[in-house]
Length: 422
Image 1 (tube, rainbow, N blue to C red):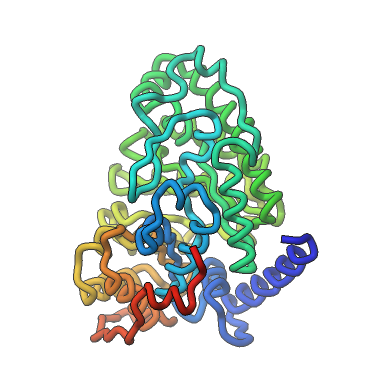
Image 2: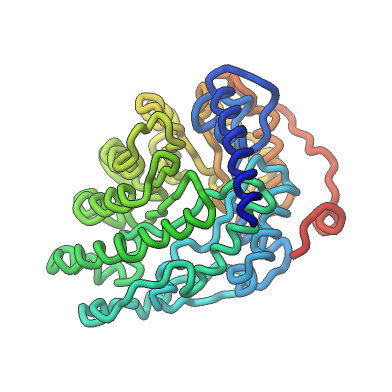
């Protein structure tokens, strides 16, 4: 994208953001597009609940693209993702790849490739098998090593199509440490050799993650960077371990990479349903998104709670907590349900989430994964249910009515006529 085109895109994006924020505060100047609906949903009250999707492997399966092509070539990855999100009519989509692996692979960690799935870390052969292995490590060249060029090219193509900067992703240094050292090894190290763990964390934070975030921000001018931290979760780790070995380095990364126009946060962890006091986990989550980000009320912050936890604890608990902290609540829709239950039952579940979670705004519903065997009708039912029942104000006695899906062309036909080539 030429520099003058990027300037035009950024100016247009600023106008979109301004309109969305004003709408969220009650100043309505026309309708919202899907992107603006998401922004308004983060900051306040949109016209209806925004629905975000991560197309990921479902987009790959719908197009019959081999995994090694989908996760290594920017055009099929981005075009297939856009096709999937556009066909179903999601409000917005995020270009999610196997973001836990990018920095690790660039460091030299071996991956296991399986057809029909994203690559996984070869956990039988962690890159740091000993302190000697660690001393041999050298930081990757940001944007050059491993599949980093694929990620940057994918973001560029995303901007060409969407005309807005993407939300970019990095692996949190803590989760990266677990993957690169091995879970059993890192737990033992925390107890027997904590200094070694701190050296690993310092290296991954300041010499791997920070330069990579800077490179992605340089290419995209993104306003939001998300570090994913699945391993900083209970019961995988105790809250004491997270406080000692994770939180200080999250803050270091955020302070080194955030700016008045760029928010960096750490999310993706879970565990409220696995502990005696869910507030203990929520307070850690809030530190992961607040520390290092001054003027939080001006930033697009969100508290992500996974279905395992809100089903165990109850959505109203998280709604109250988000309201008391003046932050957007983001809930995911349980992926297995999209694959296994009937469309009318998906509608029931959507209405239950909206009734208990949507509140008066500051709410986003996330489809983080559509299992590859999910029926198309189920995905359509989910989108249509949010459209029909998600308009604000949400009724406290909201009950699902009969939902008739509008006629739709087969996906292959739609792609030929309106989709992007993959």
